[in-house]
Image 1 (tube, rainbow, N blue to C red):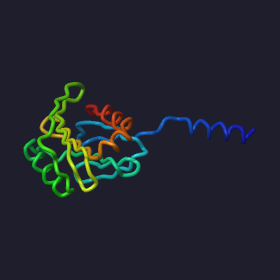
Image 2: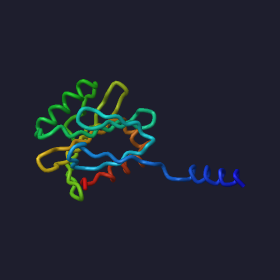
Image 3: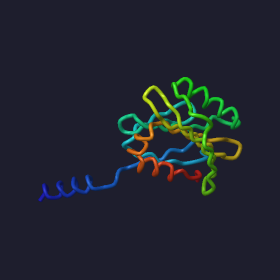
Image 4: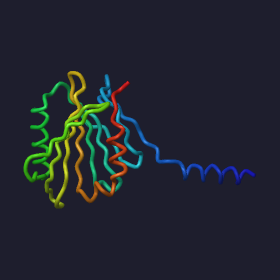
Length: 160
């Protein structure tokens, strides 16, 4: 009987959906919440956190460095791309999102040391602060993790 219940519990655990973790950004006085699947590796960074897909092929950085202007944030993004060896193929495609969380997305088609890649910077105004979500990975790798990426992006919501 004990084995039966142990087997039942193990079967239930294996069929449960993947667990995810909620993050508040910034940690003090949060502006947004975002959910990252537990299969992704995450770590704290200076102004937020970093998450990497299984296999370390798609990266998210979620940061809120205070009251920096969009121009300053974009200048930091340009510097970061140079440091990573990312060379944009022209100007970014800019999209504005209206919904529970308003955002402006700068999407760059680019190349890095591994070939064609895609980098997007999503700027989310939050009162006198700005939250920035950076995503970097090849289009092939982003497609491989498309369900997780859609779930992550769809999870962004105002902090309670």
